[in-house]
Image 1 (cartoon, rainbow, N blue to C red):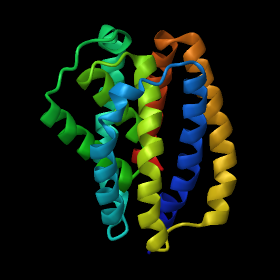
Image 2: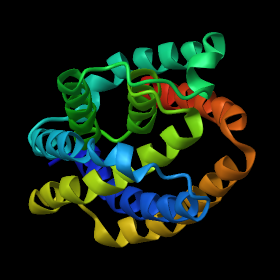
Image 3: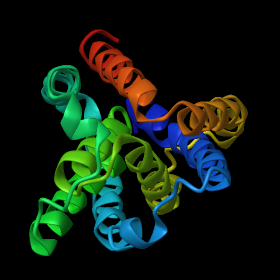
Length: 209
């Protein structure tokens, strides 16, 4: 058990409550596309459980550099291919490919939480045809569903500091609720720049922190 593993596990407590708070705000704005996102629950939960189980046996540090580059590429896509992110479109993936994509993203989310929201949002918008607002709402719903499953594995491995997790949850939850409310009020165009900032920030954290 390493400090990185404990941080990875403890963070899930805060993430779980933050995304519950985010769902509340998006649901108040009637922005959660439950019917469309519901079919994604099974693959993302299965992937998350497998990723969390793997993370309790390996250090997640080695994956950070690779995914930092991925996040930078996503940020560039948001800036230079704006229309793909702001408008709804037909689903671009077949059901089998879609399930595989969300299984893999779920695995990453279970393994290491940093940047998973951006990867999910990319799969939802570019792969499944969501606009940025509803993609954000769907992303929050998916993370809220798979995080408790991942958390079980971290608890069983002794990688959770519950006291610290609860303290973090209070801060995370208030921030997530306010961010979701702003996203509903301001729409996809505003969320675009938040996504760019989040992607770059997560990439920098992976590379240098």
